[in-house]
Length: 400
Image 1: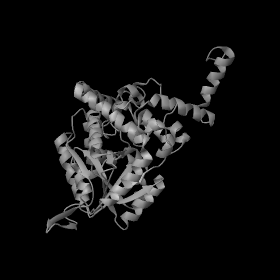
Image 2 (image 1 turned 90 degrees about the vertical axis):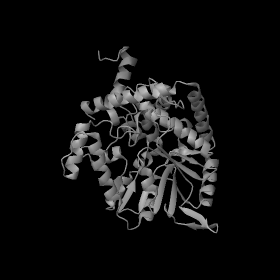
Image 3 (image 1 turned 90 degrees about the horizontal axis):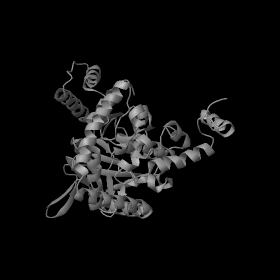
Image 4 (image 1 turned 30 degrees about the horizontal axis):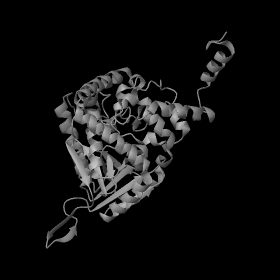
């Protein structure tokens, strides 16, 4: 990420931070935050039971449930569902980025259409397809650069004006989606006891994607909670910390395929929405991760305050999981080497991420533990060893 992109992103972060702080400073919000903190800790502590319950309830609601131990398992499941389809609609999802679905489908000559405006801009960017924030993927791009990207890719001249850019990309995405019968989304929370998937969005694109003939939901097992009420509490806090608003424009609760009982109360499936809903519960290292690492609700508040992320951008993090939390998480969903390469030793251990986190995820403490493991496995910056030896032998980090 270059200096201009970092400056653009930092200005956007400042605006989000001001809105968020003005919203959070009241008694009811503080009580909600405390409740969500307890919900997340309880859910992770009872994860095996929640997984079992979710499988049962989702199936009872007519949802096809699959369990993927690894990213490859998830990719194979998705490939089987897609069959001969060559165009797939997608909404914003860090979990989809985690398994590398876009590259996988490209190798199968299947086109993945991003429907989120920010993700679509990033997808069209010839220089980089990396997002800068889990909620605002294109925050690092100024409006002039966005207009250039869209103009270059669609072969028309577009002015650097928000409404014009939105209208052009909206028409482009809708045209592409006219060829789709399969949509894939992530999920912000899954209510295990109700067998329901909860998805938050502002643009209405999730509704488009989820209304296709087949709706695939890829969700990490760490997103499980007990009930819909708990899920709504979690997504409300996520929205407050992410965008500085009380609630998003849309909260979709999906509990099965489209159906009606309006004719003599006989249940008939396949009305206006999806004929088939498939929920893929993804482990991919989560069951082996430190429990604290799974508390995250995905708001992105940590990276707004992170001095390292504000200096180097998305180079600090792993795929869709940005900042220190992404560095820590990558060790479990990939390996120690991935954690090292994503910035394990770049973190200052200042703890600002934990202070800004609504559930107080101790990211700096997790990173410190992982550094020890990394050093013990022989993965570290060799220059650090030289400095350590200089201190040990000479009482100074410098050569004599």
